[in-house]
Length: 185
Image (cartoon, rainbow, N blue to C red):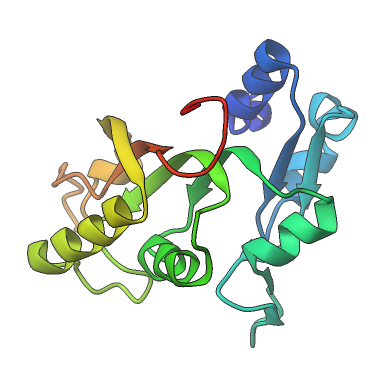
């Protein structure tokens, strides 16, 4: 596996081991994907250069955004078995939008990178995080695994001496306890 494909090693392993289709939505994929045959030539790995957002729109900088309902409709999906998110601080706002939109969130499992700063750079207070976490649990999501990201990008402070600082994000896996799917039937 090359350095570029290692970015998608999880997705490639999922395809190999589970035999499923994987859809990757990210606004800047072309350079990583088009240069790697094992990515661009895989019939079960689909790349779409768009971001997941609250509304279907094009941002001022030209980035396309699509909502989860639009993405699911475009792909002919009514349910997602496994959803992986890395939204760089937008996960709070986006999950709140989904919890307002859906009676039952349309996925069995969620793996999310949870940042300690929101997308605007503001720190998430413990009180705000706790309230958001309670909304997530009230929506039927139960955490079953967590890992602090100890990668250099997570630990390094933006300072001249470049010493490690506090962890900036963690990965959480959630099981959706609502809906009818194989994990809760």
